[in-house]
Length: 117
Image (cartoon, rainbow, N blue to C red; front, side, top):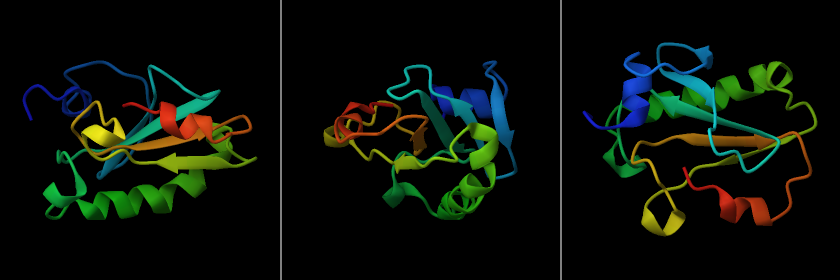
């Protein structure tokens, strides 16, 4: 999608520190963290929501398989929370499916409501 910031990062049109990358997705730090450690795992294929994904769900499977292999590198050994916001009422600010990965501290209930990207 032309105006999607995540697509621009994936296509190297916008510079971003990519912490992990494979054919299906890339992982970056969230620019508005709500936890001590806050990462975004972003499929390279653009789709706004799950229902928009045709073959894109494979990238989410790959994300969920890969996160546990990166937990030590990312400082998530003591646990982490995974959040996916879908649509306006869920406060999905960027209309490109992405996975929030939060950790590095005790993640009380309040942090769930604060993720907005």
